Length: 347
Ligand code: MN
Image 1 (tube, helix red, strand yellow):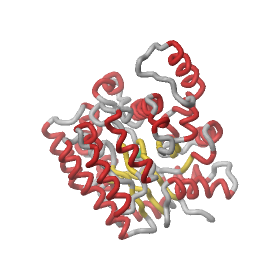
Image 2: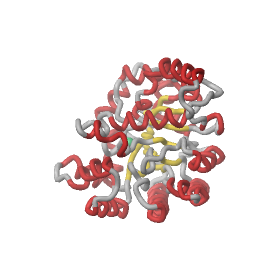
Image 3: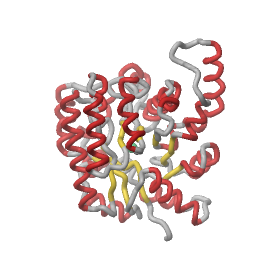
Image 4: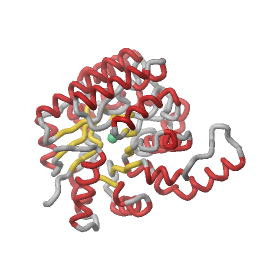
């Protein structure tokens, strides 16, 4: 094999954070999506959720053995959803710092196997304290060597198009690290019809929530303000690549008609930002037609490998992607080259 396999959406969680989740579940705190998702993972006695929780907390022997068994050389680690988004600001700040220190230790212990995205208390920005989130991002990148920042989607119903978050986006642009926009369960205002049918999670609700979030970021003008900001999304773009012409058509029509005060003219078409500012990981989507489609309509240089460990730890899905109809150069880009440049990896 002439390339390494770098997996770029690989989750972990400090035991201390999981313990706070248990307390919140016991006390009935957090939104309905949190109660649904983590009530299952931390409450079920079935084998899969128990294994997921055990693997989330491990940044050592079991994780590395799983990587070896699946042929994964390197993981880009990120705090699992909803991360610190469900906490009050002070708790979120404490947990983000603890998370970054834990991840940094794992990277120091296994520099060839792990790099990590920073966690920040995004809600600081909602409480006139964006400087604190920016300071933690700067510490994580400059002092701990982290290669990006995880955004576990909405923060108690607030999305990154809210300008109070923009100082953190500006810092990511200045530090030249990407923001990984990862799914969260839909917020309480959109959860019920998904949850009633069992559709709120990875099966579909995550994509609805996160695809919408990415569109909100685009249509609010974030990328006109921060043209060098880079976003990464998983799951082959949360379905947005399939919608490019319709999004462009109705964005132009709605801007022209002045139908919505929030929908302003942009410098480019929405699809242009999806090609210029966004990268697409294959997490959970080991599916040749989908991968080749996104390469075709977005760009082969924007589609990179991810597993979504430990939630979708299916070693055979690596084989599926080994068999993509790509030559050796393109395969090396898919598994290694794009991720190395995107995250400025040095190992
Ligand atoms: Mn994931």
